[in-house]
Image (cartoon, rainbow, N blue to C red; front, side, top):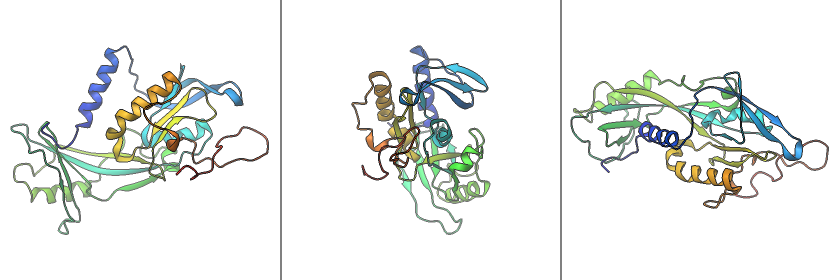
Length: 267
């Protein structure tokens, strides 16, 4: 109530707190790779390497947003991904509520931008869609361009959005309270990767939800938990989201087989 958008940081914080209270543990670090065991027919992930340390695991779920592109080398399947780096800003006035109506503005030729304006019930007003996004391909992501924590706002887009919004609101314009950027994870067919990784008994992926991560989060989390705990997702059909759907079909030859279906057959 009282907002046009969920506050992402608040939601994620509450979810983490709930998980911790239920007995989960939180470890923040850089995942550098995985260790495998077994043969071609029953490959499994035995450990995850985090900041150089081997952490044993019974199951591994890759939920790394655009950086799930790194899993291409770990799982030996193509994981095409484009990271779209986009700037956003937040104004805040905690003294009184902001009306809960989103605005989708036309192009403001004075400043070379258009605005999407989303009030939150915290008194914040979030502005995005301000243009100037940078497209980062999977090779660049794997090479370490813009690692997590180093995705920063474009000052030119901050100024354009601030100047435009300041002509709309005397109350909230001026200097933004928060200046930030995100890296949206976008597979080439606009569908996320969700499901068990083909060829592995205990490896899973849920990534590539573009800007709909929070909207997709409840069903994604439920589907993945069903898949990991029960062996099958019952709440949604995951076949269209197969993490290996871009693997080429192999016929004959020797060696491990990955990608039993041609791209596009199931659309």
